[in-house]
Image (cartoon, rainbow, N blue to C red):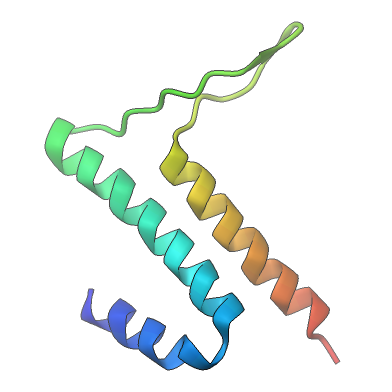
Length: 80
């Protein structure tokens, strides 16, 4: 946990990376708290589109995915 706080402190210069890592950290903590409190992660968003049933997920999963997308965007757009 301390290493994550130090990492975020050093990323203050790059606001995009800081937001990305904070989204990922928030998602990880949300799932971790569920795991500790209930023994499993509660997934409650269930999407059906016609005959397709999308895997069930939660808000923490969304934060993790958005954070990873932002990091990948930075990686691929900053290649020189």
